[in-house]
Image 1 (cartoon, one colour):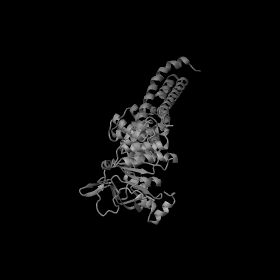
Image 2 (cartoon, one colour):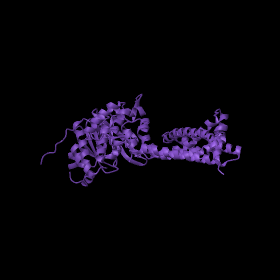
Image 3 (cartoon, chains in turn red, green):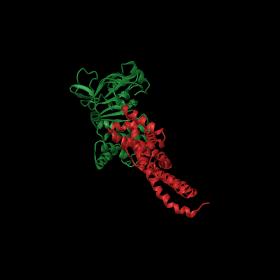
Image 4 (tube, rainbow over the protein chains, first blue to last red):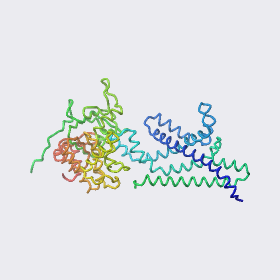
Length: 218
Length: 276
């Protein structure tokens, strides 16, 4: 059944495809982390036009399928003048889609900050930017790191969708290898195993970060 | 029976008919409503430089709101507040009063400091960092300068050995003293105290009141104190305001308010407190 020599033979190809998966996830997650915070702050704006528009946009992206958004970015954006290659489209799609989830996570962290913190910052005459940077975010982000880590792992598992817009990532590579040789058992099993390694390593990383950052808040 | 010592009155009369130049804070026709609820009704109040004003009254009377309006934590529904000769919530443009810009608001706000009932220390910063944060990030002081000033003030309030602790490691009384140091380091001209001992265990109240009393005696800082600690108010205040339903019902020197109040509501309110 299991052909170990075949498995070893195809492993390097899988590893190089793994690099694409990891790259797409990390860049996508970085984008999602930054955008998510932008949305979260914008939704708290006192300028109703900003908070409402962003709210609608975020809800729309969050509740429509990621695959549909990927198609739109890859096939439709060029008609409006924005042509991105497959990888960039994939990263933009992942980043944008997940930014909407992360914006809710940030919101929960920010809402958890007692009103007194905002008032103390104002009493000391902190500017809005400094209040966010020095008082609010340092308190809001550490408790939500585990949840954000969960979304990182989720994003890894969504990367196979990128194959629909011609990004040859890990799972697609396994499928190609399998269809060449008609032996699917080894490639797909190994891909499953690699995803397991990715998820587990990520969760270890998140735990470590969480313990470092939360140690003084009992 | 000895005559109670009357403090030299720094209090300008609140019902001013002209402009009182010695007043550092002036509330004029101030209204504040939260939706339908009118909390402050047409308030006129002058506070003299260096004056210590005690505000007493039942909850809901608006005394905390009066402080919060001055600290810009609430916006007036109508009326004006002047601080040290400048409007707080307004700016004068071409002879007209317009709503103040953020820049102007921050400029005038820098003269006011506030201590809160629940301390509101920054839990993610050590004690010394709590005190140096504003000097560094608001006033632009260097880390060393800010630390030097911070340490001095923390020592002054009796917490010289707690620089590297976190707020969660301190008692309520200690935390409140840190809060006082944190506000003082910004050198405000007016300091607001909003029921600062109400959340403390009784045995910790004294250490905080001591610090406030020292401040009152040693500095020229103007202070507005909202409190239920009547004994303390009687000792420290130059003038006491009794508030009820958003109005100043009665005001005067502490000996007068606490011992011979005229108004029945004042008498009614004070009855509940063990004799002072």
